[in-house]
Length: 122
Figure 1 (cartoon, rainbow, N blue to C red):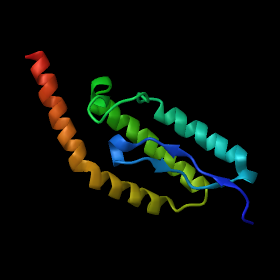
Figure 2 (cartoon, rainbow, N blue to C red):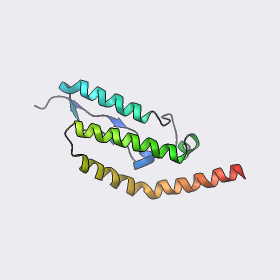
Figure 3 (tube, one colour):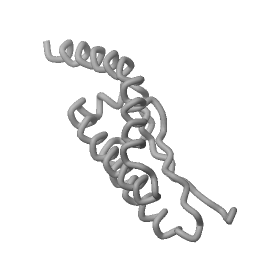
Figure 4 (cartoon, rainbow, N blue to C red):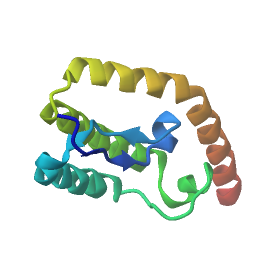
């Protein structure tokens, strides 16, 4: 049937350069969808969600914290995709592609962050 469907949008720009979209849930599976939304929201809430730009997020979290947060968010996202019938390997591969294509941007921010923090401490 072509009933109403919804998907969950989760902020992941720091890690992959864009938001992540969950698989679409039919309204008949609203409980599953809400459960997925809560799990993603909880995983994402580890990292500050207010207005940040690409640099200010590093003033609130260390690179290690951000890395750990992404590992957790990524796992929850994969679990939810599998729950919605997606192939874990395929979804994981596309996340890796996104991470890889965004890596140079992340590395530049990291280098800038390291320069700024070393300046503060010297």
